[in-house]
Image (tube, rainbow, N blue to C red; front, top):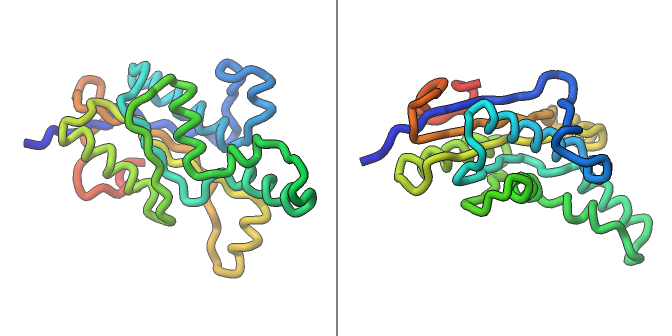
Length: 194
């Protein structure tokens, strides 16, 4: 029998970037792009609001990954060829960087996966969290959607009339109804809950 799944918190930062100084040292902050900072703050705040220190799973959704770091890496590769480059841009350029970073910061060594299905990433991540909890594999999940809109990417997609979103959104899902905002039910479409 499937268990019910509940949404314990939903966090999305406002128009201004959140203050990450309590979470990161100045050196860490300087080496991180805007998307990773927003993802960390959103995740920590969602867990705080849900009253959970460490989730059983971290499930991340991103359509494009860390674009700012990817562009910096590719620009350095084009301008410097195979000369030594800063490894930070490469390490922060992959799609699973966000979920891995959050897992490391939270010292969460459980289930950690990233969905990158253009247009369906977050619905897929929510469905995964729902299934893991409903089947009894885990009791809590941090599910986040993180994407950034940078000028170069907007220019590239404008010909296709596509405008990439600038998004940082975190849900905490739980098997427990205690303190829940509402039940997460099938079919799952994130827009029904935001």
